[in-house]
Image (cartoon, rainbow over all chains, first blue to last red; front, top):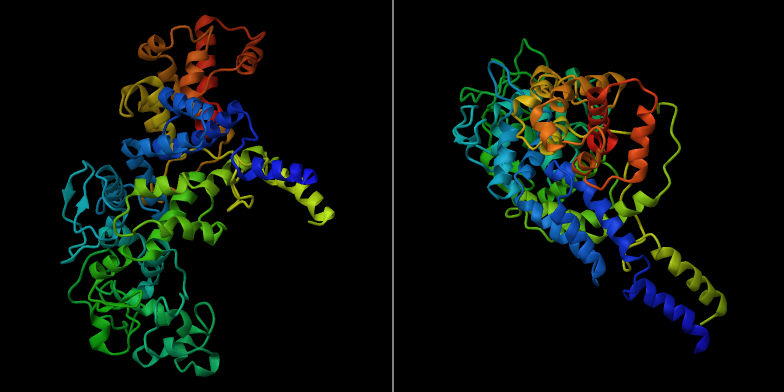
Length: 378
Length: 171
């Protein structure tokens, strides 16, 4: 038994709660951790009260309790709304104004959502927009329905492209972190026979449309992606290249225009029949939807929105590259505890930055040696 | 238990938990935190931090020069095709210091930090979120040592140094 004492002592030390670091060292780690988050989340350094809470917790049995206290306290900091604004603006590349369009509307809605403690999913469900003065206003696309950011001219104009592919991919990337092709069970494909000929093919041999014979996009396996693009792009078929709603949209290819363009500044549908091509009736994550508002509601309630927001908050605050490699188990653990339709931005921030594994990963990076500078370093 | 396994565990367990902030954490990083490049904070965060240090709101006239130079300082305006640029270049440092001049020379700011030229500790604490160390103060003194400047110039130089530090603009 005696020879096992060192092992037992070590186990107690590592697992049982006996600290390896002095209270001062632990306080320094917690202070460094929170100091690295505060500017991006609340645009400031730690307050004297927050620093005192860190020191006090370090003297007790749970030094990490200060992280919980401080991060939860940020939920009511007005600057948190500005962090959300910046995050959305940079993710969507929308800000500023032109004579025609206020590109601040998406950021305004994000800031309003946080300031009013609304669910983050409001970004894709709000039936209003928010002006520069913070008051709710009618949205600017002229559509008879609204889906938060998705029906602002800022989003629609900035992401206008042939076949509405960029609008669709940005929506799915930003709010669901999904890239085409999605898993079939997440988004079952449109039956092949309902698509335009060029999108039915899975190989050069199957390609019967001479316009697509040269694999104009990303190869010959058109149906693999466009069988899902078709659903999401169709939601935008009634919005023209200026982001305006057009009830006269047909979704039919302009015979004299560039591939993927319909007439009158609109974009062509993936669907083969005029009846299907003209209307926004579609599907989102396996659910039938009548239009973009209903699609936004499906997105809002989806686990994908919770996972994607978790990832987005982590990437933005820690300044990781968008799409950075993050252990999926971590995202799953955090997002799994959050209700996508109800959770606020603050809920996400608290869940992410009080997560033990996030804390450990960041704190270890403080102690890790810097990587050798590359040739591009000054 | 076999002796080799025991020795292995004995050696491995302390190593596994030594870098954790406290006991009980996972030993596998969940992602890689970028460490090398100095990347500026978003422009509006820097603006808010200067406003906080100065004790004013971001629309205070003291900050008008910073606001006016937003694009030069890396802010985005996607509507006109301007993407954020968060590189801390020599040109951007120069612009930042020019934009700080109205702050560092304002009466309001000077009243808030009356001994700035001689003792920048209060400004460092407000700007960097931690107490000034001897090394911080020595660095400032060393930079100014032998430079022929008067008291007013010294005060401005200290102000620029503290408000241009990486600890404020990039962390």
